[in-house]
Length: 287
Ligand code: PGA
Figure (cartoon, rainbow, N blue to C red):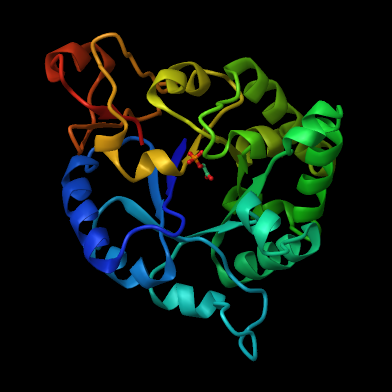
């Protein structure tokens, strides 16, 4: 399982140090893979803050060219030099606001893999597409196009994040059953492109989009869901106050670690111990 935070355009260098200084010791025993995808200007600071820890460093985009006249872009080598391991590609905000297409997603994916970066490829339908009954068509297309030219033996480097556009930053989380069934479409597409075993064992597929403590338990317990890509909730624990007495967050399967931010601190606890760690007033956030 893989739990990744997508900071988007948030956190200055100072804020990066502050957040990670708290986070690092608290995730030391995590069973799941923890990734933070940070803005370019925070990469160096984040890399320093997590050096020697179990937190993996990610960026939020990468260009396909080796180098050159691409103002505002960043190359794989530039990221690798800073210790970046993961890179988000094709986030719907890039597709919506910055002209990202299936074709450019694919180019970025191929370069990332060739360079040794692990892509977190975002796919997901808009509300209009969902209402028009096009979910399957869109996801099959996005997945197939993104993976064009990717070898079977590269699949274990790939993470796919299913993020319905209508769920991102809106507070409208997909239902667990719906997310599970939709992720099954993506897995089935990979099975057809490669092999069922590849789809089952090599590619991790996350759910993302308003993932919050209330919904996390159900979503993460679904068989198709291998983790989460979390935006807003990975930033400000204190803004996301949840009474925890009634909130039992479970991340499915023994291999999956349990992460909570409690009163701005990330803690990892066994579910059985949950009640001993929490007070009436605890603010809890799953990361
Ligand atoms: P959200 O964002 O958790 O704030 O909805 C998720 C994402 O965009 O990756």
